[in-house]
Length: 169
Length: 374
Image 1 (cartoon, rainbow over the protein chains, first blue to last red):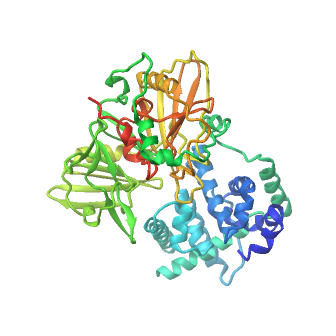
Image 2: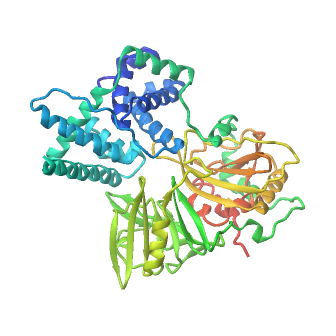
Image 3: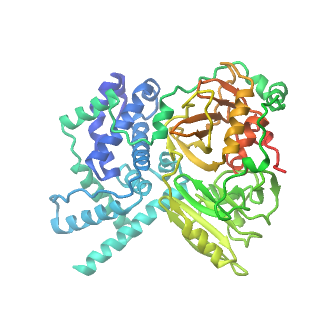
C-alpha cells in the first residue's frame, strides 16, 4: 500500500490520483468484477470526500478508505438484492509452472466466487492485504473469532477445490 | 495440502486476480469523476432515497446536564396530556401470523413462536464466545424478567456485565434462538435430549436449541435472507421524511431499529417489526401532543442507535419518524424533535426492541418509558 502521507498532503485529488489504481485492484479482489469494483471505489471516494479533512489526518488513510470500499461493496450488494457473484473471465498468466499456476488461480477464483461477500472480503484482507485478524474484525464489524472462522472456512473450501482438481487430473 | 501451502495459494491467486483489474488512466479518471459528481450507480431502496432527501435534525449542545440529571429525565418521562385517540393494548400488539412472528437480524429472518421473549446471544470477549446477560429476557408483553425458563430469541448484545462462558455448553432450561451469535456452525449435544443446531444464512449464524426436534427443524428451516421493508444497512443515521399533511391516516407501521457498526461508518439493522394501524394512529397522536425539544437538546450524543418508524397510508403516502436513542427524542417529518415519553414510545417499542436498543449509558431509554402491557 505504501506511505499515504505524502499523497494526503496534496489534498483529496492528489491522494485519489495516487491511490485509485491500488484501490481498484483491492476492490477487484473483493468483488471479482470490474464494474462492482468501480462502484465500490466510487462509493467509498464519494463518502470520503466530504470527510477528507478528518480522514487525511488519520494514521492510515488508505486503510480507512479500504474499509469504506469493503463496506460500500457489502452495502451496495445488500441493497441490490443480488445474491450471485459474477466470475471474471479466466486469463492465463506466466509462471514457473504455468499449468499448475493456472489451476491454482482458477481454484482460488472459483472458491472466492462461491463465498458470501463478507467472507470473501475477509479472505482479501487476510491474503491480499496481509491484515491480521483483529484488523479484519474491525473492518467487517465482526468479532475476531468470526473473522478467523471466515478465513478458515475459505481455506477448507480451497482445500476441497484443489483436492477435486487433483482427483480430476 | 498443508495450511501454509493453502495460504500461499490464496496469496498467489489473489495477486493474480488483482492484476486483472483495469487500472488504466481512463478507469481511474472515470472513478474519480463519478465520485466527485456523486454519480455512483446507486441501488438504494426507496426507503433510503426518501430518507436521504431530508436532513438529519441537528442536535446541539446545552441540555445534556438536564437530561442526564433528574430534572430532564423526569420531565421527559412524565406523562403528558394526550389526544383523545387512545388505543387498547391489542391495538399496539405486533401483528402475528399463525402463532409465529418474524425476527430479523441484519438481513436474516426466522419465524419464532409469538410467546417467546427477547434476550442475548453469544459475543466474543477475551478471544472466546460467552453469553452476557443470559437469563435476562424481555417477555412478549414487554416486561422484563430474569427467568431462565422463558424461551427467547437472542441477539449479540450485552445485556449484563455478568458473562457466562459455560452457558454455550450447558443444557438450557428453555428453548432459544440465537441470531448472529459467535457460535460455530454445526450441531451440539447439550444433554438430556437437548440439541443446539447452528446454520449460516449468508454471513449470519442462526442457532436453535430445543429438546423438540420438530420445533428445532421448523425454526431452522424458516431462516432466510430478507429484502424486507427496512434497509439492512444505512450509511448515515436515518432522517425523518414523508408527508406532513394533517389529514394523513396511517394504516400500518414498520419499526426499523439500527445500531452503529464497530467501524461507525454504517448502521446495521438489528430489529424489524410490523405493527398495526392502531399503533400507527396512536403514535401520530402522541407525537402531535408531545412537547417540542427545540434545537439544542443534547450534548454530544454518541450511542449510535436509531429507530426509523415508517407509517404507511393509502395511495403510497408515508410518514417517517426517527427516534434517536442516545439523545432521547423523536423527530417528525418537519424536522421537529419531540420528547420521548411513555406515550411516544409505547406504541412502537412493545416487545423486543427494548432488548435490542439500549440508548445511552446515562439515559435509560426506552426501558424507562415502556410499561408492561396489561
